[in-house]
Image (cartoon, rainbow, N blue to C red; front, side, top):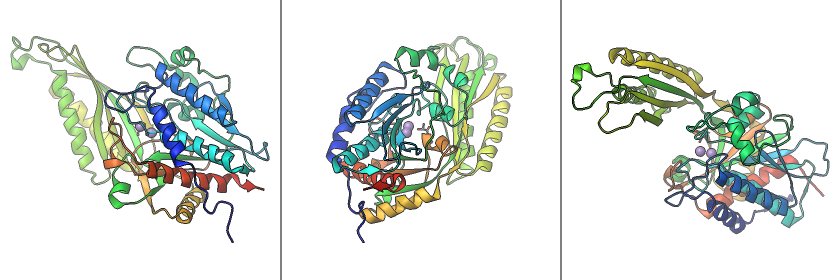
Length: 416
Ligand code: HGY
Ligand code: MN
Ligand code: MN
């Protein structure tokens, strides 16, 4: 017996056009994006998204962390909505699709519902979560973390960027500190479409990733303090070299991650050196260790060994050391009912699929604490992301949004 959703598809051309139009806001230097959270370009992207949502007949609410909820009413407005969403903020050298595909793919689902005159029992909400990336303001997934009760709003709004500006000040400055209290908004379920940001789906020629888990993560910010001195006239035995300590700890992080191969990952992505002069021994280095694994116990082991090893390195080199945990979340298991709907939708639509664990963190990881949540991945070229060369195909984007469409309709229930 055919069902209403049998062969419903979104409009892939319209989705692609919207992705390309959004990509023109906050352009990078090599074809990607630099639309960091709460900057003027983020504001411009938010306003475009808001206009598109209103053009699609939705009403847009903003909470006090700046998260945007675009609502399409259902037959029964008293029911909790089905949310679909992700983030519009990007890395400083980010791609055009990380996060953006999830927000604009959800908008495309609503546009397609409008085209097809589809009514759902439950309301539908398309969400743009503030500061998913955690690059300008640590930690990542900041607003979804406040929404899920992981961080207090006060702590989150006090987070500072390298210029000392706070989240709260910047929210006000761009006009997106909304009136709605964070976390009061109820939801029945959330679905997040995202690019894989890894090589598995493309390597295996698979269309859809059914994301069963998100791996756990820890971010340790380490500050090493040595002694600035002349690089030419200071004898080697007299040096207190913070840069040397940082180099040895970067090596230690790599060794610890490899010791838990093949699933563990570890690196230092962020590093600031002071005074950063060609002929002054580095007096201070501030850097962030990023370690991840699907098993909480392995993360704890890596954390403990890196802390102990860093302390030994600092002692050997007579450096001061401070270690502050600036981000952490445990491995997450997503909702089995939603995962089954995603697999069924992919089968119905003729897309190949496989279960997969997310290497990256996502807003869905926090939202899963307050409602059933699941993610859908599409492949990305060479598995590359957090790089301006990030690329996907129009077909991959459409396939992911088609599956999102069907899973959302099943969850929100079509009504005649
Ligand atoms: O760091 C992450 O995994 C995400 O991209 N914010
Ligand atoms: Mn993302
Ligand atoms: Mn990202």
